[in-house]
Structures are given as C-alpha cells and as structure tokens.
Amino acid sequence: MDATRASADKIQDDQLASVSTTFLRLRPKLLLPAGPVLILLLVSAGTPGEQLVAIAANFLLMLGFFCWEALRMRTRSINPQAFARSLMVTIVGIASVCGLSGGPQSPFLPILFAPTGIAFAAFGTSRLTRSVLVVLGLSVIYIGVSRFLFPWPAIRAPHVHVMLLCATLVATTLLFFGVTGLASAYRETAAQLEKVRLEVVESTARRTSELEALGARMAHELKNPLASIKGLVQLMHDSVSRQHALAEAALDSQRFELRLGVVLNEVSRVEAVLASSLTFTRPVLELRKQPQRLDTYLCDFAELVGGQAQQAGVVVQVECAEAYVEFDPDKLKQALLNLAQNSLYAMPEGGHLRLSGAVRAHECVIEVSDDGRGMSCDDLARVKEPYFSRREGGTGLGVAIANGIVEQHGGSLSFESTLGKGTTARLLLPLGAPTRALSRGAS
Amino acid sequence: MKARVLVVDDEAPVRFTVAEVLRDAGFDVLEADSVEAARGPAPDQDVIVTDLSMPGASGLDLLAWVRERCPEVAVILLTARGSERI
Image 1 (cartoon, each protein chain N blue to C red):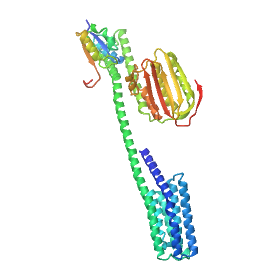
Image 2: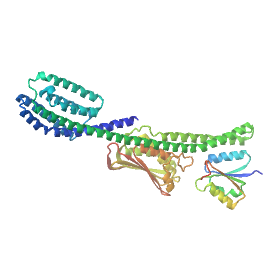
Image 3: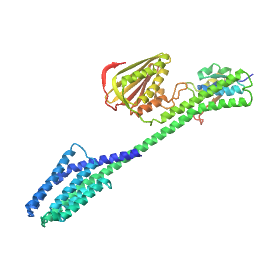
Image 4: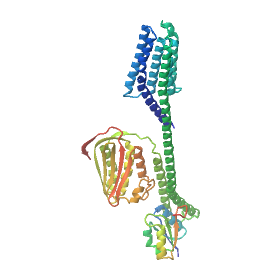
C-alpha cells in the first residue's frame, strides 16, 4: 500500500502545482486594475504626499513581484514549498501596505485573508500552514504597532469605506479562484486515486486467478510422478515384507534397481517442477539492469550454447550491429537459454540456430530462430502456457519463464512458426537508456 | 497360462508402474507408448489397460478400434480426470 500512498502524494502534489501555478499567473491580472482606483481614492481623500508615495511604492513593489512570479510560471510549474513562500511574501507585502495606511484602521486588512485562506486550503494542517500562520501573526503585530511608527492619520471617510469594499471584493475574488481551484483539484485527486485503487484491485485479482490456475496445474503435474513413486515403493515394500526380494535370484534385484531408478527419476522431476515453479511464480526478484553491448552479449551467449549446439549438429549464427541496450544480463540469459534449448530440441537432425539483435526507434528486437520442425497453430497458441510441453520429460515452464522475464523488462515475447520450416521467438525490449546503433555488422 | 495384458500410456514412468504392479500380480505384461504402437500386439491380448488422454490417438480411439477388430479383448481405461465429462 506504500506504493499507493506514494502515488497519492504524487497526484496531490501535481494537482497542487497545477492550481498554484494557475493562481500565480492570474494574480497580477486581478490586482493591476485595482492600482489606479487605489491612487485615485487616496488622492481624493486628501492623503498626505509622503504617505501616498509610500503606499503607491509599496503597492507597485508587490505588483512587480506578482508580475515577476507570473512570468516565471509561464515556463515552469511550482512546488508546494515555493508556493508557500510566495504566499508569505504576499502577506508581508499586504501587512506593509496596511501599516502605511492606518494600521488597525487600514481598509486593506481584508486582503490579508486571501493568501492566508489559500494557504489553509492548499496545505491543510501541514508544516507549511504553520509557517504561514507565524508570518501572519508577526504581520498582525507589525500592523498593531505601526500606528506608533508612522505619523500619518487614518484615511478619511467615506473614502476609507469605498476602499474597504474594494479590498473585500479583491480578497473575495482571490479566495474564490484559489479555493475553488484547490477544491476541484482535490476532487480530481480523489478520482485519480479511485482509478489507481481499481487498477490495484484488478491486478491483484488477475494475479490471484493466475496463481490459482498455476496451483491447479502444478497439482496436476505432480500427481503422476507421485502416483508412480507411491505405486513402485508400495510394490517394493510388499515384496520385501513377503521376503521375496533379497532371498531370490539376480533378476529380482535387477527389478529392484530398475524400480528404484524410476522412483529417483520421478523425485527429480517433482523437484524440477517445484524449482521452476518457484522461479516462475516469483518474477518479483528485482531486475538488475545494466547497459550492455548487444552484439558482444549475443556472441557470448552463442559461445554458451555452442557446445550443446555442436553436439546436436546445429550451427549457431549471430547477426547484430554494434548497439548498446540496458537490461538484466543474467535474467535475459536465462530467457534466451530457455528459448535456445527449445530450438535445439526442435532440430534433432541438426540445423541452424540464428541469434539476431537490432535496435529500432523505441525498442530493441532480439530473435532466436531455428529451422527445426516448427509448431502447429494449436501448439503456437499454447506455447506460453505454463506446463505446456511437447518434450518428453519437459516441465513446460521454459517459455513461461522467458515470457515472465521479458514482461518484467516491460517488453513482449512473440512466436512465429511454420510446421516443417522452423520457429522464431521475438523478444521486444523497450529502450530505457540512450542507445546507439552503427551500421557496421558484427558476428 | 498367464493372462496377457497390454499397458498403453505415453508417460513412461506411469506405464512402467502399472506394468510392474501387473507383473508382480503374475500377469504377462507388454508395454506400448502410443495407440499406434498398441495396435500390433492388441489382438493377441486378453486385457488392454490404456490411458485415456494421450497425444495423437486417445484411449477411446483404441477402444473403438479394439471393438471393431477384436471385440473379445477387454479394455480398461485409466484416467486422472475427476469426472466422466471428457
């Protein structure tokens, strides 16, 4: 569930970033028209020159800061910490204007609610809200004592009332855009989380049914060897208790040896089924991706299967240009080995095993081809099924494991086959790291 | 004279086990790994014990063949299936 929480945080941060970016871009546009109205009202209220200049300069400074931020937001988006800093600077700016325009009697006091309210809505009860509250507290103290710092009188009525109404209107508008934007962002976050939750539920259900099917097939696979083991051991047990086995002639001890041989083989088969199933059901083992030179890797792999291929009368060919691809070399080797072994099995009379690699725009293609007996359409459709095998004593897990490994890399495994002509297994791996391919051929 | 039994199963260990149990019980046992291989010796048997599902021809195919050619031979079908639905 940690992954879900992390994705929830990520979604919420993204939403917050998008809303705050929009808000910061919009803010100077709302404040710009208020500037001339404010100056006009201050002049007509007979505000002393120095006070007028101080307020206007402060207002212009704030507007400049807002415009600068809006410009920055055109090319990038903001993180929660930077948004909180911006809101705190805004509070300080508004408090400064309030201090210059009558302190506790300033008509601009209501505007303080805009950044504070937006901070509450954006950050909830987090540390950022607490920082904003500290700045607000200090600002309020400053506003309180500012009466004693500046000798200017409070702005006269009725102008102060008009300004109060204007300030309330501006604060309400800013709150409206900020808070409604955040509210719909939270709704959107909830919707996205619901989607993530459904995906998790779905994939868990899918995985469970896969495991159930796997369990059923495994039970089926183990039933036959166990029946043999039980039957033969029972036979030997009965014959020992009848005092036949050791008393009688050499034929009986040969029989015994033969039976024990089958029992041993069957136990090994059970072990093989269990061991492969464990690898198959646990593809969660972390991938250790490393950049690899594909042509060298395939040549090394050809060396690896070379001995076995030679014994089977198979010629191994590698066809790959110089290319660099990122994957887990050990896991991919296992996948390729499983596929190559199927190919060798399909060529009992010898033939050609071709390993080819190529890098396309977004993916790396690796092919394992043979000119062996090929597969029927029915077999081709079932080839990736766990426990499907046409090989005597095969566990039927080779392709399933290879498929699991390729899928773990985010890629796909597909097969093409013609009866009597051969089979090609195609692995597509998405390119994670930068790769380059030159036209020079290597073999 | 010992009764003759032919055991037909594609899976060698299972076939061997069934054959061994029958040999131990005193039968004259022959083994075949497919229906095709079983057709030759089938008419000379007293009983055929065959697996139901095998690659290629199945135990039922063998049963039909035996009914037609040598109906005096008894056929016993073995299966790991849990129900009579095939």
